[in-house]
Structures are given as C-alpha cells and as structure tokens.
Amino acid sequence: EPQAPQAPLPQVADASGLDEVVNAQCADLLRASKALMKISKAAAGRSGPSETRVQDLLAGIFGHLNSETAGHIPPRCLADIAFSLGKLQVYDDRLIYELLRRIADMVKFKAEQLRPHDLAGIAWGYASLAVRSEELMSVVAAEVVNKISDFDQRQLSNTAWAFAKCGLWNQQLVDAIAGGCMNKMDTFTAQSLSHMAWAMAQWGTRKNDLMAAIAEEVVRKEADFMPSPLAMTAWSFANLNMHNAALMRTISNQVVGRASEFKAQDLAHLVWAFANLRVQDQALFDKVAEQVQSNIRGTLPAELANIAWAFAKSGVAKPELMGAIAGEAAAHIRDFKPTEVSMLTWAFAAAGIRNEPLMTVIGGQVAKKTERYSVGQIGNIAWAFGALSLRHSELLQALSRDVHKRMDTFKAQGLSNVVWAFAMVNFRDEDLVLRVAPGIARDVGELRPLALARCAWAYRVLGVHSSELMSAIATEAIKKLDEIPLKTLVKLVDATYVGFLPEQHKTLQDALAERAKKISDYVQTTFSSPDRLRQPDAAAAYRDELLSFGLVDCGIVGTPILLSHMNIDLPTAGFMKDCFQKAWLAKPAPAPAPAP
Image (cartoon, rainbow, N blue to C red; front, top):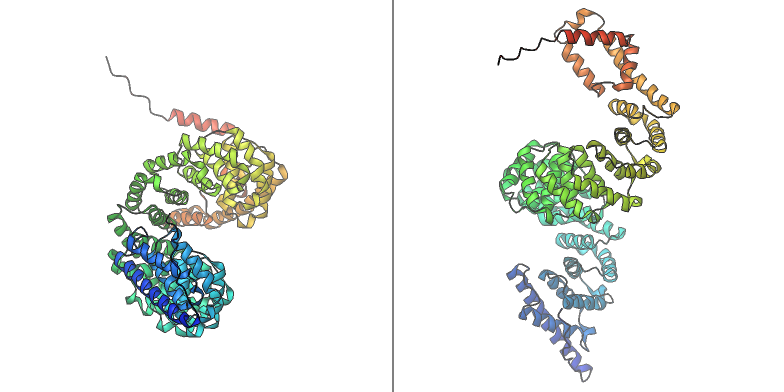
C-alpha cells in the first residue's frame, strides 16, 4: 500500500504572510481537484493511484492538508476535494482514506461555513467511496437541516443518496429533505427522482406524500428516463411495498417499447419489482423473457437468480427462459453467492421445473460448502429439493451433518423443511429426525398450517414417532383451525391418525367432520334426484364446486365421515371380496403361447 508522503511544510514568517500562503494553498487544491475530476471523466473511474499523475496529485493534497497553515484552509475547498476523490471511484487505498480522515477532522469544526453545494458534495464524496464517518456526517446533517430551504433538487437528492448509502438515518434530516423535495418536486430531473426514491427505500421510510409526488413526476417525465433510473425507481417502490398503479403502467410501457436498451441488471430489478408488488403484467414479462434469452451469455449470478425468482414468484416461469437460465447458471455455479444459490433453487422448485443438470451441480456445490450457507438458506434449499422429489445423496448426507453440527441455530421451519425433504425422497436418518423433533416442538408456533401438516406427514412417512412433537403439532393446529384450508386439514388429520393422543386428534377430526358435512349438504342438495345427474351441465358444476372446496378427496379419515353424512354405509369385507372376484373373472383369458 502506498504510504502517506511527508511533504515539506511551507514556512510562515509572520501573520502578514498567512493570507498569501493560504491563498496559494487554495489555488493548488483547486487545481488538484479539477485535475482529479478530469482524470475521472477521461477514464470513467478506471484510473487508480498507481498512476504517477494521480499519485502526485494526491501527495500534493496530502502535503497541504498537513501543513502548518492547514487549519486556515476554507472548508469549501475541502468539500471540493472530497467530491473529486469520490469521483475517482478508487476503493481500499490507504492514501485516499487518510485524506478523507483528515478532511473530516478539519471540516467538522467549520461545517457552518459550508453552502448547500458543499454539504451535498462532501457527503456524496464520502458515500461514493463507502467511507462512513459518523462524526462528520452528524455535523453535516445538522447543517443540512438548518439550510434545507437553499438546497436545489440535485443537492437534495445527492444528500439523501449519500446518507442512505452510508446507512445513516436521522428522522429530523429525513423530514427536512422530504419537505424540501415537496416544495421543489416539479424541478427534479429523472436522475434526481430515481435517487430520492432509492434513498427512501434504503432508509425503509414510507413517506406516502413524497412517494406519491415522485410517482406523479415520473409519469409526467417518463420520456426523460434512461433505463437504469427507471428500473431503480421501480425497485425502490417495490422495496417499500408501495404499489402505484399509474407508475407501474408507465414503467411497463417504457420497458415494452424500449426493452433492447435495458441491461440485464435493469431487467432483473424491474421483474423483481413487479413480482414483489404482485403486479401481473404478461406483456412486460414476455418482453423481458425474450430479451434475457437472447442475451443470456454473460448475465451475472445475481441477475440470473433475481430474474428466475421473479418469474417463478409471478407464476410465469416459461420453460424456455428457465432452461436458458439453468444452462448459464450451471456453467458458472461457483461464482454464485449463497443467497443467489438459495434464490435460484427456490425459483425452480416453485415453478415446478425439474432441471436435473442444474440441480445436480447446485447439490454438489452446496454439499461441499454447507458452512457458507445460513441455516435459513439450508432450509430453503432442502425444501426445494424435496418439492422437486430430487434425491441427491451427497447433498442429503451433507445436510444431515450440517444440521447435527448447527442444530441449535436452526429455526423450527428450517428443521421441518429438512425432515420433509428427507421424507419426499425417502432418505432415512432416524437419529437426526429424532434429534430435531424437540427443537421443532419447542418453536412449533412459527410453522404455518401447511408446514404443520407437512411436518406430521414427514414423520409418519419416515416411520419415526415423537409424541412430544405430534402433541405440539396438534395443539398448534387446533389454535390455527380457522386458518387451515380443508385440503391441509385432511392431510394433517391423516398424518396424525396413528399413535396419537385421542383428545387432540378428536378435536381435529371434529373440525374435519364439520367441513365434510358442507360437502355432503352440497351433493345431496344439488343432486337430489337421478334426473339431475343427467343434465348437461351437471358434471362441470360438480367439478367446479369440488374445486371451490379446495381438495381432491377427504382422505383416510375424512372419507368415511363424508359417507356417513350422506347415509352411505362403508362396504363390508365380504362385499369387497366379491368385487375382487368378479373383477378377476371379468379379465380376458391370456392369449395362448405361440406354437414352437
């Protein structure tokens, strides 16, 4: 790393020469700042301190900031230097860090002299280089609040962007910036609108009046938006879970009409936003799919994962698109971060697309490095393989080892997902399944109704009994009876039918009986006579009504209950024997063997 140079300090004989020295310093710093800006523009941020010219400029700045007269340098000059350093976009450089640290020490005592232009510039410079100086930014925030009425649209958006980028939030500052924006909203450019929306999303602050005003301006100025700011605006609103119908229609129209101008990252942000807000827009998803498929080569892991997730979440995951994503992802799976692997795996499982080549490489990748994945990600990946009924022996064994090692850090949902995945592919690990049961039982309240039914089903299928867990599942299911769909209740009652506490199972069974009676009443009322069965619309009406009940059958326990409501006796063993005999006798005789 380059070391901070020890530049010669200018000597000041007396106070009369001070102004001259300081003026000379300011002139040098101004020239250095302008030179850095030119370098950043010419090289588009690719110039690094290793280049002699940049090194010389930085060394000169360092010398001035550590001179005998440095305390007399106006803070406005220091703000310009910070802004120009930010423009360089050079990270992890010791000399630049030392310069910014020195600027912060000097400015924080004279922040009241900074103009809006200076305040926005210095905040932007630090944020651009990901240098978080809380002491400096706290002083800057106070000055921003005091001078907010003098900020123009660019300064407002840059300041908001900088504080959000640094992860710094201050209610008074946010309120002041939001108020300033509302007063000048009609002057905002497309870039400034995008920055403001992004800052609010990063802060997680839902200011409805401000966001509505931003949306209105975006609609009004849609022709001014380049692809990236448009995509980022959509992402910001979705991140805040704020659905503005007019805004999303405008964005959709722009994307459909200009899809070829959007980069993969922009498209990923867009479809993620529409999926997160549950906006069904077939035209947009079709156009994005077409664009992604034709340019799939070189698409980054984060973009592939987000696009796959968005299409799966929206229920429009086309096999052709998902196949293209799978091919590109499989070739570069080592470059995927754990979060991206988890999202991608979930997407294919949620879409019901069993792409074995992709899932095989994912399984191998996760199995080798399970420790890199959070327990939540491990649970999601296990669920995905289970949902696709994919048996990946190496992954299953690795999951078992990982859960044994980190069991205390797993939540009930994650443990339940792992057990369910094992059951879906008939992978028996009785020791693990028994060991996780108390953990699931302890936090069973985290499980939703479907997860309760799946967990009980998994233990039954694997032939592992835990009275403690089954009792906890039943008790929790009884608490959530009003939330449990009929189909899930059927599975839950069947799964807990064997080896269960009678009083708990009876409560669940009574709830199933009550719902089965509604089906019985419908059938007996609608088909009260044989003539009704002959009517043309009878079959369709019957099918549609059963679908509305949300089930295919009433299960092992529920079917006898339903037949009992309808006064239909269950067939006796003798009757079943007669049926089997008649079916056997009705079989055609086997064809004679051909003559030798």
